[in-house]
Image 1 (cartoon, rainbow, N blue to C red):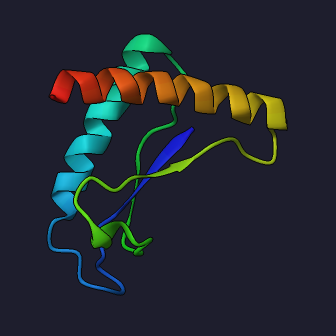
Image 2 (image 1 turned 30 degrees about the vertical axis):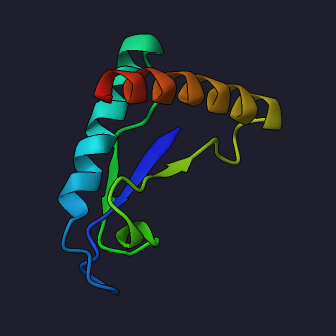
Length: 91
């Protein structure tokens, strides 16, 4: 999987993008602890993918053209487990 984070430098203004990045870093750390090598490095881009609409937005890409559908679905299950653990820890 890969987390794609927008700074909004090209497109709609995104003044709170660092807050979304903080969440992405926490998720990345959780994934690395639970499932080493599952996640690629966070991709920081100037594009805007509607992450500016609300604080806490994330864009997560599952699989590539080199993965099977089953592999992408399995990685989604692992990300769900990591997200649940992270959300429980934040509350």
